[in-house]
Image 1 (cartoon, rainbow, N blue to C red):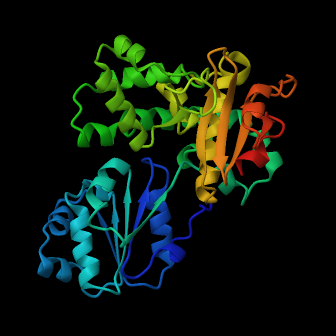
Image 2 (image 1 turned 30 degrees about the vertical axis):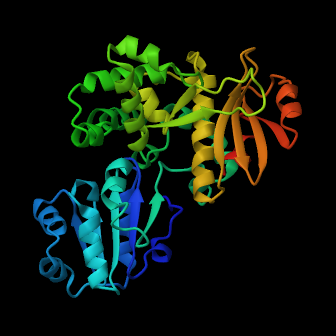
Length: 374
């Protein structure tokens, strides 16, 4: 059992709704069930995919909802994004039962946010569960052990079922099943997108542009849809935890590029499954991109879990001076160049450092990355 960062017994409170977001299959249900197996609270566990539960919660019928919760101290609902007007139903539940705690899970942040935002103002707390973070693996594995397995993380990512799979073949099969059955499920259901192949084609194009600035016009041209559709697809893919957008940083220099964005995949294994590419590192020409994607996403997980409130960017000028990762926190800028090789000498970005005096610079490579991502 991999111990997750969140301890639900410290997060679940009477009169409040705890919302657990995250991609499908990252362990939200397992996290919830592990808590329920140990809690002394009298609880009711239901699924938002159950038709009768959807009817009850979305009914806004005070008597029916009170009868549903009667005798329980905790109501837990898995996959709550499937319930229409779930926020209004939960508001009625906790307003009528001040001692009642509620916890729900969902794999679609845009869908649950839309349904719970206003009704649950002041009544909710939200957490995001990612694929397993190195921060969590350090509970059972040493930094040395993690570094020894770096190639596996770059190729197969860190979904729970993938990490516990026994063989390379099994890992690949699990990832292909995740991509084929779960990856786009929420988008296709909730946004009623009919052209799923267009969406997948765009993901494949993004998979080959890790660490590069993405042109929406170019994507639109290649998959033969309009730019507004591409923009909408990208937004939905980010809100369903498939990709992460990183914008450009620029404040002082006219020559800074500020209009483009880069897109990273939340998990390396998903990225590789999308392009069906699981060759070993020694046989690949994209190890730099894999390492950059891995580092940025592990850093994002660690910042989120440790509550390091950070704004994240990349930096580039029209003269092609660039820095992979800029973090802004506590009024200071931290610049990081990500390099797979620990033998390459990296020049300090003097133009950036002189333009932004309150900044520091560091190179992250395969020798020193562990402390950076935990």
